[in-house]
View 1 (cartoon, one colour):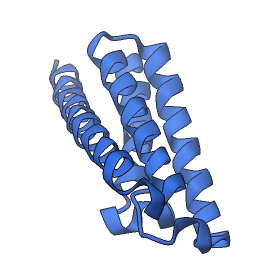
View 2 (cartoon, rainbow, N blue to C red):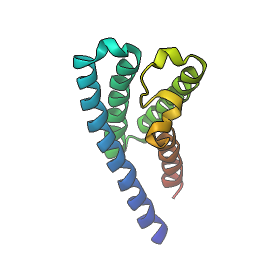
View 3 (cartoon, helix red, strand yellow):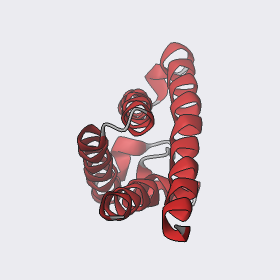
Length: 128
């Protein structure tokens, strides 16, 4: 009984973080696209994609569509890793530091760690 209660608490935390990221990433991306797009078009376009991914992940987690959630979290992890490597190999593509550059180092690596933690929780809660 304790493990099931613990899983629900962790699940609520994962969902809350994704909900906060959904709101913040989407609002930030819209501001960047409207006001600052010419400064860093690639980074700001990716910010909008991240907002959409966070919204989809939040929806999937809240509605318990675990297959969709897992797919979305893998997509997020792959995207962060790909852009992280790209930002190291070609830093000129990310002239301005962004949530994507260097695997989210400026954001405490949360963009890299969040999907890993979410996938871990999904695997654990599905086996509980």
